[in-house]
Length: 421
Image (tube, rainbow, N blue to C red):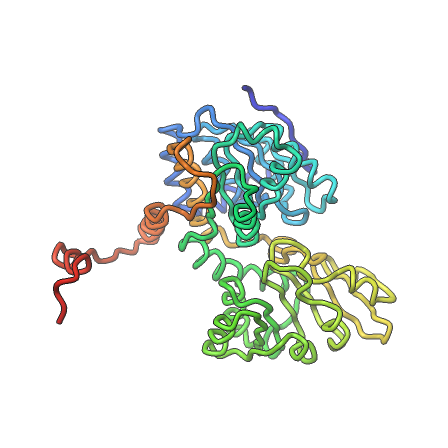
């Protein structure tokens, strides 16, 4: 079936600028480049229709080009209303990839774009947050029969998919790309850590040194942010609900306390948990004047914005990506990026060199799904270990780094139990 040439972007005149930025990102994505070169020759996705719901960025464009060159009939939509780079969206259309994404689109347009991607009747889904998959399972069940696999990019999406699996609602096999070590150890820690600070800095132009920074959630993303903020001279406080993560934060040298305690002294609050209403009424009521609120979790539910709206007597946009809420007692709280992913709302997301590994996993996992079509159970799979290691090997090679190899004797020793001291 021929692909529908439908697209919806802000302005096709932005395509030329997008081409240049995509080319620049490609220089920092050597692993995806190597995979793309192989895909050009082998065409593993010939005749395969793919719907991808991802942040429309320069890095995503390079993944899209690799899949397209591999023979895929690809349609792309945004996985967040504020993460789209409009020049990139236009360039992707110019490259022949139908793209439906406009930065700042409302919720109706956001889901209309998801529907447009699904109109491609995909055989494979690529998701970042699981909105595409959940829409498939609720509003487009007629398309399930066309699908034989999919991938999920982020922690929040994997949580949703595993919940669907537990409830017996999942209808086709999916691979949790987020769980690859070459993804969460690097993308989540180094990518989110740096890009979150970048987004907050661009939005506010603050000095990090000396600020009390409250990091809410100490998963891999939270660890990366806390590490980077500490490196910039901030006094970092960590809030957690998991005892093991809390102990780890203490051992890493951070103060750990309940949010209601941290709320009294924090200058900057960043939610990064994947849960909802993490910052709620009790915290708003005791935050000091001028506190900055940002979210780096996938959805805009971590900061309870409806409650903040009710507490405020006045709201105004004081700067791009900054809404000032004046409370009834005169205190002012500053919400960044409408509570959406600040690293993409106000900045450019992760550095391309980090996304190189994440999207290499995406590409190879999609190829794996094609090769194993009809052989997989309806469940959420981890990334195959060999793919994870292959991505690591390719990245090391691209960096000019060589490592040792085990000798035959060493392999035998590690595989046996007889030999000890």
